[in-house]
Length: 232
Image (cartoon, rainbow, N blue to C red; front, side):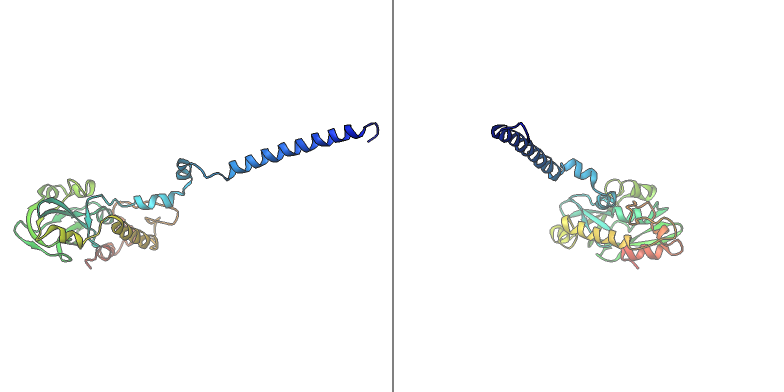
C-alpha cells in the first residue's frame, strides 16, 4: 500500500473491523427476529384447517353429560334430568321425519333402546343415558322433529326423567376432558372410513354434513348409524 504510513494502515484496518462488527451485530439481530416465536394470533392463522376444525366438528356443550350411544343428560331440578340426542347423533342421521318417545309414567333404563328416530322410512333406536321414570315429554319435538336437528341441546330436548340419585347418575356418564377424548376417538373413526362420493371427513379437512351416514353407506346407512349409536 504505497503512500500509507503505519498510522494510516491501522486507521484503515480499524474502519474495516468496525464495519465488520456492525455487520455481525445487525446479522445477529436479524437472526433473533427470525427465530422469535410467532404471536398467538399468527400461529392460529398458520394452523392447518384440518387440525383446527377437528374439535369443532361436533359440539359438546358444557354442563351436559354424554352417553357413548350419543345421548345426553343435563340436570334440571332436583333429581329430574333432561335427556336428548347429541350433536353427533343428529348430524349422523340428518333431518328426522318422526320421533317416537316413551309416554309419561314409563320407565327407562341406561343402555336400553327407549326411543326411535325415523329417517327415510327407516327407524333407528336410541339408547337412554339414564335410569328412571319419564315425567315429561317434549311434544314440540314430536310435532316438529326439525327442532332436534336445529337445536339438539335446547328446544330439541326429548325427555324429562326423574332419576333415583342425580349425582350417581352423572358419574356414569362422560363430561369435560373425558367427553372430548371420547368424541375425538369418534372423529378418528370417521376419518378412517371412505365413501364413494366426496365423503364427510377426508384427510384434507372436510366438515361433516347433516345425514352423513347416508354418504358413508348409501345402501346400509341405517346399519352404520346403529353401529355408531351402539343400538345395533
